[in-house]
Length: 392
Image 1 (spheres, helix red, strand yellow):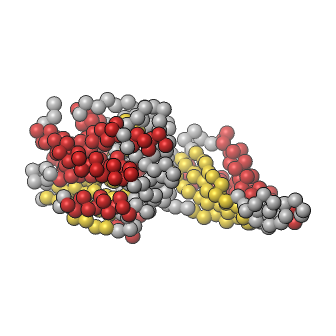
Image 2 (image 1 turned 90 degrees about the vertical axis):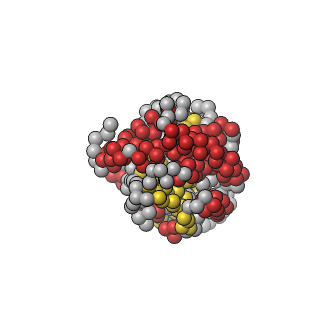
Image 3 (image 1 turned 60 degrees about the horizontal axis):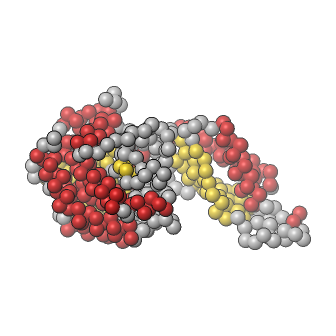
């Protein structure tokens, strides 16, 4: 049985639901890629401003990043993270339209109780989760310095409270050779594409010796101009992932060795460029997770918690989790055969099941935020675990 204040928050989310559905549907119908989310940022900031939040746009030098704050009296700061970038070709196949609307819903609902429970609600508009790590400049700018806890809920095919995330480094490699006629005088050429192909073969040769919690995968981004020209330029982009940053660095050095060996074998010159920021592993806060689970189950949801260290991806939420207690549970919006980054997941993100999951996430985050504002013992446990204390 929920107490009156929590019940009031749930009713506030329900009252706001037409507005939250409008947000989700607008974002879903207007997908924008990383760092290009101008319509999304404008729609969200306008909504929050209409509800009395103080807005700061273009934070950390990112045009589509923003913060929206509302405070009443002295108290903790609870941050809700809104993601809103989409994927190339498949739109919101990671459900960021639902993440943004759920976080806005939780922020608006919790703001309505600040007259009774003092504190500060912060909605952080986070661009470019899918590519480039938009939260990382926000972390580096000190935006989370005075935040006591941060949270968002990710749609998924399972409802899970805790899930590890892999650290990730993007690396781009280019090989430079010499063009020649591929039929008449191939012996005068130096084949840059062969170097890229050898790079993939070299990395594949590593796989038997890789730990199970690591990943290396990539694509060829440039393979030549025509079949009858020996390619004088070829390029590939790789993601290197591991569960801890120390091992990520070791694996990265091995990948660099694969590039060097390919260049040596083909006589090409190569150049390596980091393509973005490092995504850090997710530092799980079990005290915060336990609080959220209690609230989610009180709302009637069933948790289907699997192993924490399987089916892992990477997220810049991990970088936030290194500086402030951070929660990123998942909520079911589709069946088990559909997962993130599939076109079917984009359909689920615009479905009634997706919208129901979004509203459930908003309710659960709002009442978890309320617990953190009014129960200092609960907040102290969360902060003590983050500082190195024992997990519950």
